[in-house]
Image (cartoon, rainbow, N blue to C red; front, top):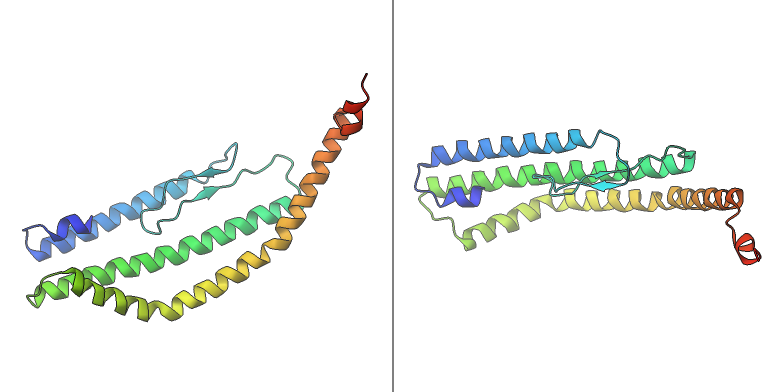
Length: 180
């Protein structure tokens, strides 16, 4: 939205208020879509991208007879998703605010908002965010590696459950092969 507004011929104080109101509208939409994720679902569902974090929220299906291992795996996935959402929401919020402040400062100083001026802002923002990004990457890798064991346990438990169901129904390999 701010890209459309920056080309407006309206005074800069109006642009600031408009940008702020658009951010609050996006924030309300994000909270609304997050609230919809609290309802139970019949399968894993992926929502529309969050307007601030740009990540698609996932609502995981909870099996009626979910085992301890499957629950541990699902909760691990939810923790990683929440960690990602929180980081990118905060990062992108800081970026949006810093960008609006930089554009406002350029206009106050009588300078034009050009691609070259914005490239200086982007470079500065990324340099300042480097340590925060590296910390995020380290934590993200740790969380993903720590998901391997719960995921493996859940997969094994799921295969065992499926095998037991096949044996109970008599639909295993041997029952099918020698029916005649």
